[in-house]
Image (cartoon, rainbow, N blue to C red):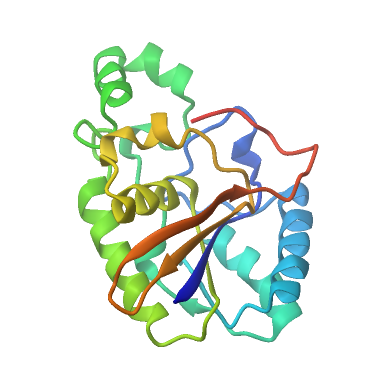
Length: 210
């Protein structure tokens, strides 16, 4: 069985106020860079066999820290980039409730069926991401690490476990910066959840739910 590690990138300036980053290419802040260093040390100790990351700068910068500790060059998996949030990009949920109350109520009821206007369809994106992850992991050693994003990771977990995608905000309400989720992938293609949201334990991480 492959032990596939999925890590969220480190903290960014948009964590303050819990703004939707989505496809916006936001880099890490000072806290995020320190988190990436601690993640890298932890992943080196766990003996990760391979490394991949999404195309977005916050994931690439987190992966760079892991590369420096492990020597693994990150494979770029564009399918792992965060869900695009359309009109919500750069805004908080509170701002969206004021600006677009109808679409926001629909999003909160089912964020997949009623995803943000002009945003990505999460159903399509998670299929692309899971296929890309499976294909990549099949070529890796026993413990590959992929660095991605909060919503994408939560959608992947729901998809492989058979949880309704529209429930991802309720069933998996939190994923900390640089937290690690571990999935098992058997030779017959069966997925299992080994651990979710294993945090670095920082006291300076912003913990607002999404």
